[in-house]
Length: 392
Image 1 (cartoon, rainbow, N blue to C red):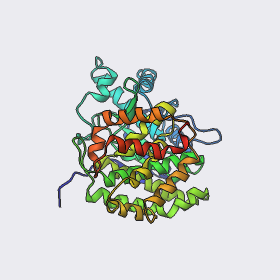
Image 2 (cartoon, rainbow, N blue to C red; image 1 turned 180 degrees about the vertical axis):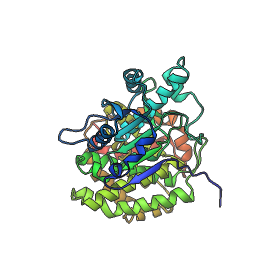
Image 3 (cartoon, one colour; image 1 turned 90 degrees about the vertical axis):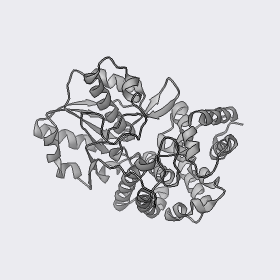
Image 4 (cartoon, helix red, strand yellow; image 1 turned 120 degrees about the vertical axis):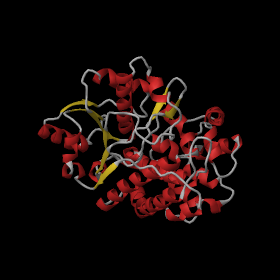
């Protein structure tokens, strides 16, 4: 058996009312905190923010709320947060929300820490100027981050990376700096009031994390899948199989929400070990140019990517663990789930442009695929996955 690295650094509390039951954790981090979150959809309460605010007020922890995290947060969004909080001199940062808010909390901590130590450095240098992501083995920031996910998808609560939008190069890219949350609280209650489209995008994002990191092989940047991340991914695939039909029918139970939150967290741990591959890279143009939610924008390509494998035995374990007979059934489910949430029009010329862009910017993802992929393959996957949305 080949050797491998397995990286887990976050103390995790899972369960309903987890943050209330373990609020003594906050006693160790100081008396001033910045809370990074986002505006919730109308009619949805930010229960995680309410819980933390009540605890902070009881404990006398002074806090400042930043609630304007953008979807797929660009570098400029983090810079604005820094300008609004730099004089507050927080001891720690709390991220509450979906993956964008949790990633933004990490990025704000990194930028704040970087500016305190080396004020002459630019934002881009602080975020991206220290080698390659996944090379690090320790947090590269002295400001602790605590997270509470409120959507079921990114797994950012247990990962060391943060993905930011680079408007200067029209794509998203992971920070090179490493920043695992010190503590994370995963409470399934926080996702129970989520609108259906957020559940869809979260579940498909978590599924993509697991599937892609299970299948990928080593490239020049990142490690291949290993026996550990594949083993825990299979637990999450089996959880998905138990709630997938309820999600599609919009008949989720309290137990289903528990399973969704748990599966998302597990797949976060899994993909931290070997990274994502083809569907995530293909989805970036939909997020960047059309503001499609991250999970939907990458998940929409998941089924057609699997169908494209010439050797279906490479993916059969994944397909069956997820509760499907074959990749056609898998792709049909993904299509049904994403079609009810995605509304856009694309052109053939855009697909050609995105295929070129993928081949130029995502070389490492192509290297990670177990079978060779040509530009024609990428173009074909784009065309089949987006067939409903192509403007004639």
